[in-house]
Length: 196
Image (cartoon, rainbow, N blue to C red; front, side, top):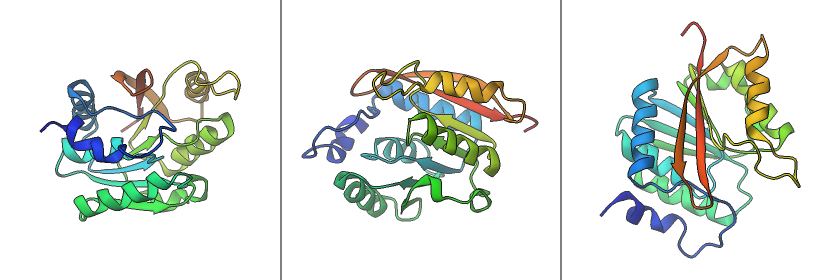
């Protein structure tokens, strides 16, 4: 059985409310490459949703410890977090809370923070400022696209470029990754803290 088939339990029976990664060969190679480049062993994910990213990361490297934080606005988020915790009891943690309530000083054990939560300008800016203060070696940011929603004013890529242009934002872009998602061909961007 491949990871696409193995991951079906995460979305079957739930309404489709947001897109997510599909753990097919391209995506698995991407995650493997990200983990190889960063040598990350402790990952914090902001935004769990259905859990496909967590499931893929945990399957690509048996040494990775993964902690997801999500506001839990959907029932499937809380149910799937429990299922993944049962599958990976020693390597997966889930916290039901807003990333905006995280304290930077509590995040020093993470090598990489994966930002895939609130994509609105205010919410994403808060998450990026949290990451700047927490200072992990790497940031991985999903939905690196010009526009997610003109109606809602969601423009992740220009916002990320704005942060990268700020002199006090200590990260630089080192890689982009295209991957198939359920709703679009999507992109992630990997940032590295300078002087690391």
